Image 1 (cartoon, rainbow, N blue to C red):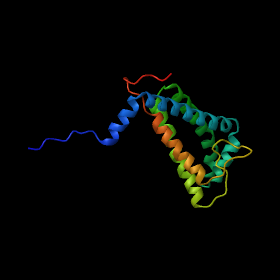
Image 2: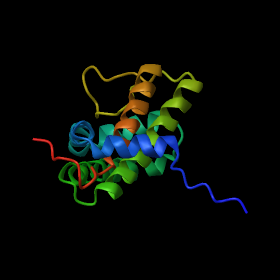
Image 3: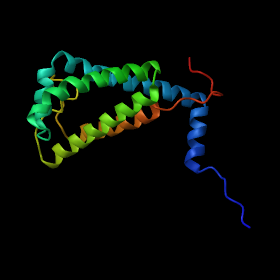
Length: 164
């Protein structure tokens, strides 16, 4: 009778080495800080100017008109709450899941706008004087942000020395 193969997959072993190392612990801590900073900086102007953010949402032409104000009120509060949670480590994985889900939604919205050749501001950081236009650079930034969120969701192994 053949024995069951219990070898750990290569990716799992590599990930285990990363989260068990000092460099991995530092990378995870830095990613938590960067992700939190991005979402806090993104949320605050939208909280201050929900009407402007509702206009940005309406410009994507994918949501019913009546929902723009609701989305403009809820999304920035979710961003801010999850950013604080991921920064402090409180409910880190849940916060990362929420931020990751929001980011996947943002990626879909940007891809939709690119596909329909809409010439609009992304609204990512509220209505700024020089707001970023929707396009491939913004899409790639969000994909990179999603990778950081995934890293921030990890917790260094107990045997790893704490950074700092």
